[in-house]
Amino acid sequence: MKWITWENVGVDRMACAWLIRKKVDPDAEFLFIKRGSDTKELEGIPFDIPGAHLSHKRGRCTFCTILKEYKITDKTLDHICAIVDAADAVSDLLPPPESAGLDLICRGLTKVLHDDLKALAIGAIIFDAIYAQLTDQPG
Picture: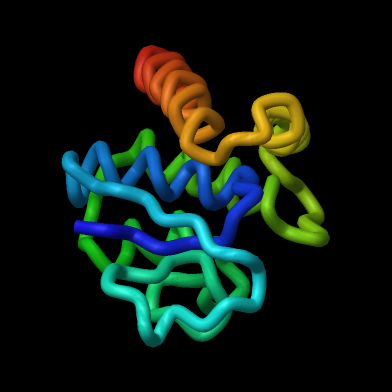
């Protein structure tokens, strides 16, 4: 299946792509469109685009929406959801400490790679590492 999102991916879109490939669609292909482009004529599932079914809801990031919509239950993914949500939010009173660093790394990947597919590939390694570390943490 094709998944459609805006170009110049950031933390939420990188996290979503990783989650989609891990838990929803292992063969997912990603199509990047310019910000503000209409997705109605494109074949695929739009995500992290305002107005799309899979986007921010009730103040939560798209990663959280995908977890809920696909009924994915996993304590480690819930923890990652909190990190991504805070990293993607404009303001969060008590964000997880990992949030700011993760946002900085994801934005930097996009800037140095100039290629969204490469950014998703490197981002996937980062999210695999985060998942592994959080899974191994006690409590």
